[in-house]
Length: 167
Image (tube, rainbow, N blue to C red; front, side, top):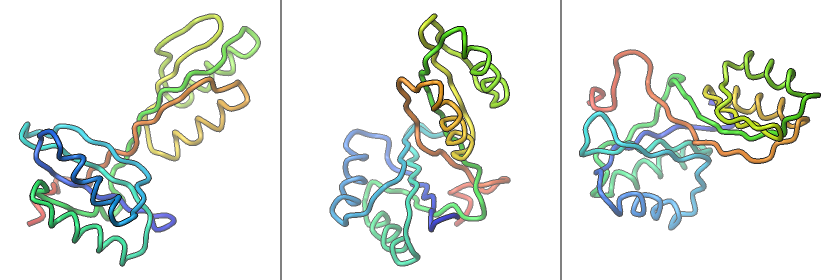
């Protein structure tokens, strides 16, 4: 991946305190996380943490080894071979009659959705690859970004491979 970026998928117990244990390991070892997403999986007893980071092979191996030592961690894998990556962003931009058509054209081109509208501003939902999200943000800057939030990356391997089928 670009700039030594890599994505780690971690299956953990779905119970309180687990995320604190996992992120605490990163804090203790001074590893920086670019994005982190967490959600319940197809099996309700597990949550999946998707972590996007930067680092060399040594850093990657250290993180994997340290995560595997945590009792609450059931499975850890680096997603290689260009996994499917998606992100969600909500962005609120200024809205007035002079720029409305240009904003709506961008919304259509990026297959985004207007989810809230007022004469002064509109909130837009964009889903896609991180580079698509970045491009949309850059396009909206001249219109005046009022606020935005991004979910971080979620990722899956392509095909029928799963984290548990790798064993």
